[in-house]
Amino acid sequence: MLKQTGRVIRWPAHMQPWFTPWTREGTRNEWAHTGGSDRRLQQTDGNMNLNDQKVAAMAQRLIARIGSVAEALDTKLPLPRIPAPLRANVAWPADFQPSILASLAGEGRMAALSSMERKGAILQVSELDTSGKAVLSQFILGGIDELGSLLGASWAASGLIVTTTTGAVAECPGLPKAGVWPCSQVGTSLPSGGSTIKSAVAVRLPQGRLRAAINFEEEQGLLILDLDLKSHSWIPSGEVQLPLSQGSSHSHHLSFDPKGDELLVSSSHDGGALKWRVGESDATEPVIVATPQAAAFGRVWHAACGLGGGQVAHLASQAVGSKPELLLSSSA
Image 1 (cartoon, one colour):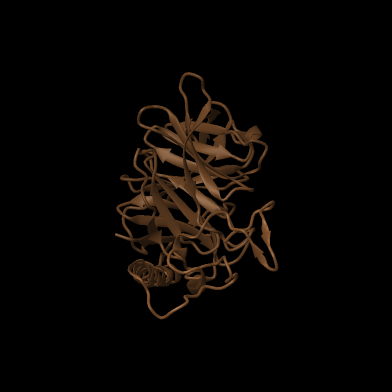
Image 2: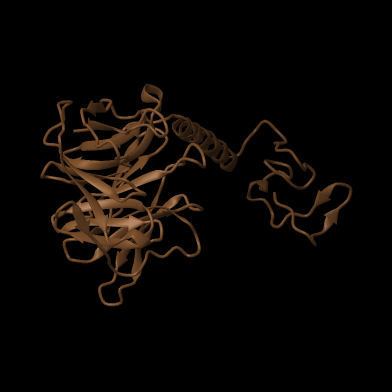
């Protein structure tokens, strides 16, 4: 029984309860935590009436139920058997250090971007194998030097959309021309509320409006935002709870599919990736599309994006500062 201040003290060691115990019927001390039997549960004789038998039976059933629940909570669910990613043979340009991926799913093309230099390369990834993957073209993002380093990117038929460390969202329509992909800021900057933006990605929906996912340094969850076409302000539309990172230095990388229906969240710690359906009225559970690979590879994981058909592309380095590798995996 909980004790409350101001209640009557029954000398020498008894405090009057809030209410008469419902199990006290029959005998004074039976199943009691009050009366003359403080701090213990007891019965006065060996014979139990019908009500007492019901209580005892219910207690036994409850213990059995709680035991099974405890065992279930203590049991880790097995990870799906997803093959380890395979290394693709990509010859990156000598001065190019990519850290962001965006895929034009359905067309077999992928854009790799460097965060600080705002450089990029377009690759052709037609099928999942380890044959040579030629870099089709290289480019520089123009017009956004003052917006900060890149945090994320999404690629659709209308063009490329990038987010930056200042919270700006910029759109680069069409395709690069003469090695330059011109971009310009769209809408207002993503709201930060005084916090530091840790990761962010934006995509243009088929209806024309923008959708963004943003994660802050002080938060474990992801905020989903839609840009209102009339007010040009970002409006919260959902939230995703991220799995706990293995340390404060680890973060999550974000990637939308071209339609903005699916959000891919990958870990910088081990390369594991989860996929959520977003923007729907009914909440959906995340789907594991890439299992953790830290024990097998020991790599630094930079980014990931979906290629469609259950395929995922990863950027990872053997060590900090080394040239990233392109890894391809499939959960289909």
